[in-house]
Amino acid sequence: MAPDETRTDTGVTRSRMPAALSRIVSPLLDLLFPPLCHCCRAFIPEPGEVRLCPSCREGALPIEGPLCSCCGRPFATPGGMDHLCGDCTLSPPPFVAARSALRYEKSTRELIHSFKYGYKVMLRRPLGLLAAPHLDHFVAGFGADLILPVPLHVKRLRQRGFNQALLVAEIFSRRWGIPLSRTDLRRTRWTEPQVTLSAAERAENVRGAFSLAKPAELAGKRVLLVDDVYTTGSTVKECSRVLREGGAVTAVLTLARGVD
Image 1 (cartoon, rainbow, N blue to C red):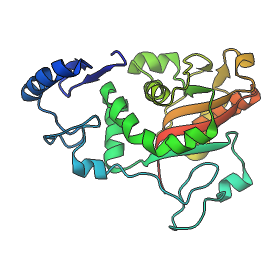
Image 2 (image 1 turned 60 degrees about the vertical axis):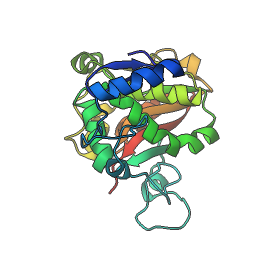
Image 3 (image 1 turned 90 degrees about the vertical axis):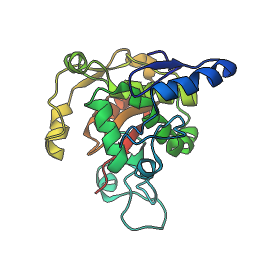
Image 4 (image 1 turned 45 degrees about the vertical axis):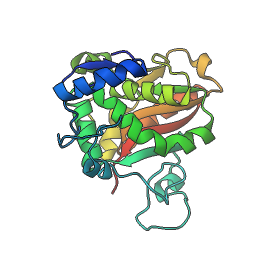
């Protein structure tokens, strides 16, 4: 689908059109294909770009401070200042900071599951629009030269048909005007799905699974590494380690984060 298109729930594509034509065509499309909430399928009289009903939009809960100033993990106790968590103090990660926009629960979990495992690639746009405002300030302060998505192995890419991290990274690249590279970071060996593994098993599973296509091109660059969900951080840490060895400074962005 072209970058300047949106898609209805039925799969009908609407290109952005001149305002005068849109005022005529859009009501007809809404009559034929009424806008429904991406989560609960309720009718939405004024769907906007995100296309969530008020109830489901309230269920897309943002990650709020205080946070670990490095990995972005929210602390259970409200109030206070951001500071390092115990894990980052004892074992500093290879990235300078990680930030997630939303809590991986309720509406957010349902949207990401439908996007990633239900093959509803049109959900990248509402997910990106929900997440980006919570990341704008951090991204502006980091001053990135480049955005890189966490890559999929070619075997999994063939199975799934798309890389969800790349689709989200494209949304972020357009919003912030930061160049996107699809090839600089590569997954060089097959890894088992992380979802059923323990934290230690996840780290071992992805060890040595990534490489840089042209390390010299990333030396000295400030890179935003994009993935869909931060769970234990094993994958983004391994990617960041490879990027750091190539001379890049990395910050991690994810749509959502699992919260203890």
